[in-house]
Length: 112
Length: 111
Image (cartoon, rainbow over all chains, first blue to last red):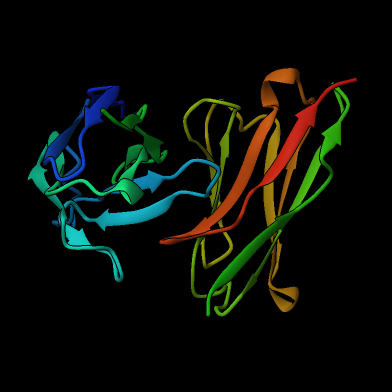
């Protein structure tokens, strides 16, 4: 199975600060069809996960554009340009390129 | 408007079988894949399996011996059945279609 390693496990930020989360894969997530199925989710406390970014860098409808994704192959990054209070929670990367689907271990974003 | 809603027993005894239902609206099960994902208390997300739009299924290899996913397209329902439950199966169980997630159902395995 593909292992996704997220760093850091915990991130402390102040409101307005820009932060980045890394997701590294144990193998390339480039599918034979040319797409890369690496997505980012946010799970706020007590809520279901929410899709933020799909296919590395595509912003899901309704998600603020302070969220952005980048990367290729095995290395991916989620960036939040100016953290807001509603951004607090746990961020997960998830891959759908290789069966079975796997999740990263999560990065908890806290207020400093 | 797309909606998914999980339902099932909140408490299951060890060694017994769990049966959950995901009732969907706003889309057809014959056009979209539906995944099951679970989350132990205080821990991360674990993919359990998927029923593809065509009706085929795939499972997490660690759960495959105990897990079955099926559907009733006429009722817009997806079913998860998992046997030989243990305490480590305690957690929130979600069904998911792409960006849409159910609210989750808490399942506790305890005698």
